[in-house]
Amino acid sequence: MERMRRWSRLEASARQIVPHTEDRTREYLVPPHRHSWGQLVYAETGVFMMITQEGRWIVPPDHAFWVPAGIEHSMQTQGSISVRILYVKQGTLPNLPESIRVMGMTALMRCLIDEAAQLAKEEEPSPDSRGGLIMALVREEMSRLPEKPLGLPMPAEPRLAALCRAFLDNPTPHATIDTWAHAMAMSRRAFTRAFRRETGLSLSAWRQQACLFAALPRLAAGEPVTSVALDLGYDSVAAFTTMFRRILGAPPRRYLEFK
Image (cartoon, rainbow, N blue to C red; front, side):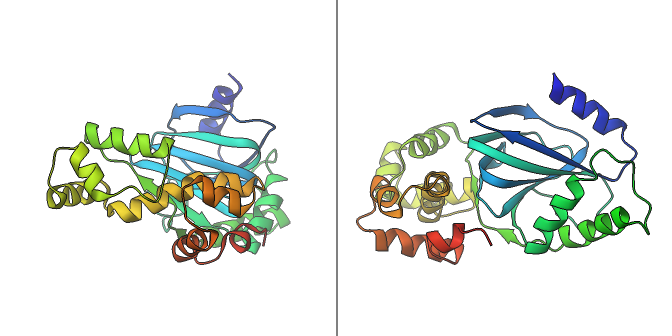
């Protein structure tokens, strides 16, 4: 009910960017919904997952998620979380992406979001006031945030989607094309083409992304890299770290440390 009231106030707001802060002490799920404002969601602490018809996106610390206006989405948190949201009125920032994506945060953007949160209950600040200058910097920096490869597209074909959902329930780096092709009663070549057509990725790349989905919330919660790597079926921590660095550009501990 409170969420519906907030969305009603949002739709009636004359502001171009509306900050919002939300803290939760346990896991929760925001059901599928859509609204006429774009939405930049940043977890100051904690990890969350965004789910749309296009796929799933894991959002670890030091990252944000951009949802353009009108796209249906739901949000699931992993344990306690402190969320900062910037609602952006459609047309305010034409340089923002027209599609869903995970974005890397900058040190400046983190500070600006914290400052913007203090303006949440104020009217639109005048351009030459401190608040107006903060929001002007928010607009500028938001357009510069880099995209990060943390999406996991889901196939539409029912049998293939079922295989992917089963993998997400029990991820392992040892799943093979031949095993999946056999389950689909397809040749290896036909399966490879079908999987790429449905997801835009090879099975190997998709599998590695799925393993990251399973690993990131646990690593962000403080679990040792060794236990996470072995639980996911990797033969060694080195093999897991190599995969992690190849996709995200840094080993797990360095990637997840608060910059």
